[in-house]
Length: 125
Image (tube, rainbow, N blue to C red; front, side):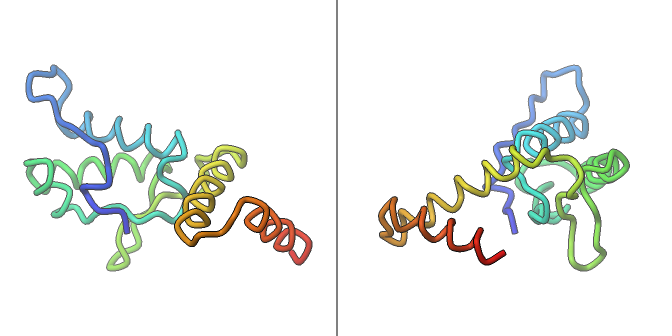
């Protein structure tokens, strides 16, 4: 699950845009850019509200609007996750590749081995 601290969302109290719209626009941008990928779980309404210093109803409205736009899905007790329809394949794959590269580095795997692992996975799929 993505925690509230993992998201680079800020609220500008001096903005003419209401807080729910600021949060909605920033989350939508994170989804469309591939920073948040299909299946990524968003923070709970209460956790994000507490992190941003907003009322829970404000964040709930944001999630409702994102769901209406098809960007997220609410799965009851399983939480709110990024929906699958908003990413082009290349954006999503590039983000997955970046995550894989970081994981390979952290595991101490050299570049050639990491690429070989991908080739092997592609052959077996």
